[in-house]
Length: 323
Ligand code: COA
Image (cartoon, rainbow, N blue to C red; front, side, top):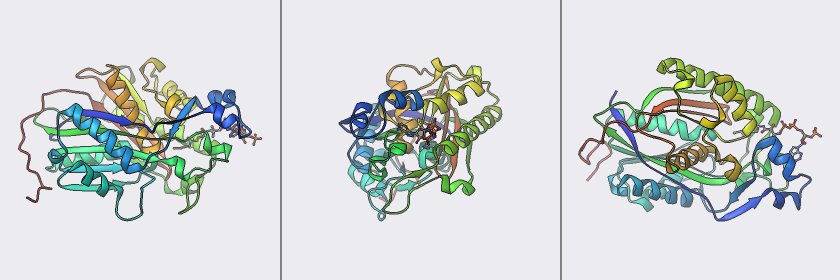
């Protein structure tokens, strides 16, 4: 497989902070319940899926030292597109001045990892530089008067620039999957709000995430002890703890943003990755385990080798180039 490397990362959160106290003031809930049952203290509301995506992508491009026109593949993972048609990635592609292909990908909260795996496969097929963005504004499809769901979700975006190189592969193993018989435990009809059987989602999420993560560790021939950073989908700290315990990864190696972002769906792994990278928690050669799950019910895991060989000076052209 062709080499690839993450060369830039960035995140974007809307300005409006919604604390547990804000919910406490108008719903039959409490800060204590929310923190103990979910690990969430606050989340952000606002913005649009495309606007947040553009902002996180600009930060990722800046970090990579790249301009939009050097990107020939844009994958936008989202469950909350701004419009039905065209794809939200069209707006993002235009505002960033990208070249080549762009498309939306809906794998719900597993979207970022689905997007990363898809982009890397397309780099292997000949594209040169990809932007992978997870962006969601679930506050718009959440009934803010339903305590079962309102406290859980927040808005945000996380992005990475991934470049083809002549070095090592980025993804050592991946596992994408779905159990479509579970569509009714978590869904949102057009024009409606998210409906969720929380307890059932919790149980299935733990099982799916553990099994998927175990598959990629085995495929990559890597032990849990060798994982420097575990980047799980950020839905509930109790789900993350249950998964971490079963895999044998101690909490010091988790990347967590859930406490201040809530569940940002397709954005969550990108945000957690960006915060961890900004905090200097990753160095060249480190192994990162991503694992996400979401409505569908989808799951996605990947073992990623961080850094590696310097980016080769591959030409700007690619299969998406039309000039
Ligand atoms: N404040 C206070 N009480 C609440 C509440 C809130 N915000 N939300 C739910 N409750 C109540 C329930 O109504 C229930 O009351 P009842 O026993 O009178 O019916 C009680 O708390 C316990 O519900 P239970 O479902 O057992 O709680 P839980 O420990 O499973 O936690 C969730 C509920 C939703 C936090 C948890 O099930 C969860 O996180 N599930 C997964 C959700 C998820 O990840 N969704 C996104 C997938 S990508």
